Amino acid sequence: MKRENIFTLIGIVVISVTSFGMLTSFTMDNKAFEGHKFPELGYAYNALEPHIDAQTMEIHYSKHHKGYYTNFMTAAEGTDLLKTPLEQIFANMSKHPVVIRNNAGGFYNHNLFWENMTGVKNEIPAGLKSAIEKDFGTMEKFKETFNKAAMTRFGSGWAWLSVDKNGKLFVSSTANQDNPLMDVVEEKGTPILGLDVWEHAYYLKYQNKRVDYVNVFWNVVNWKVVNDRLNAARSK
Ligand code: MN
Image 1 (cartoon, rainbow, N blue to C red):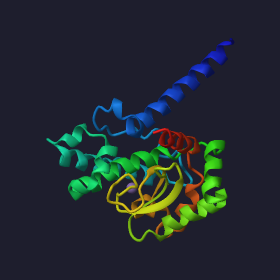
Image 2: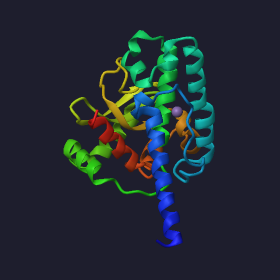
Image 3: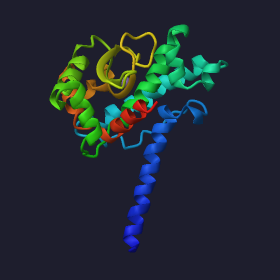
């Protein structure tokens, strides 16, 4: 093998291991759980430009997201929650104080959000595409449904693509920092794609025009990650 090819191969292996590690540390491998860690962003603040600007990303990640994490850690201090994976906390959300619901939710939701975006143009994997077409008819119909969920969420919250317990895809929206894993929400499932529609996610660049932000989101979706999440959710 040529020297350059070896370096390319090493590069691919490193990238694969890194992206797999990111996913497992957040959501997919409860057995390896070793406490709640604030994640690396995984790309530069300006990586999603021009769609999502660097200043918004910096404030969103280093202030808002960090704030949810810190408040969650403070509220969980001295309790078993420090050793409990987020999925398990969410499954029993109704038994915990609202400060845990808001901040553990905010911590998890942003982990997922950063992961499901990329500045690298990518094609949707065939498995995910056919799953979407099966459950929504067409990609266009799916995006329309998702955009509507994002646009009709009054005030702050999230739009989601999730997998239900039968493996079927569905779109929903939740208020504040709730998510479909929580026992307190109406439509339950495993989220595989999330869009933050709090004003802090778009106001600097798009001001009141949430619709513009929702539309550009499709330019930065990391379909590979969404596809991996679909496969993981269905093999549970
Ligand atoms: Mn946010």
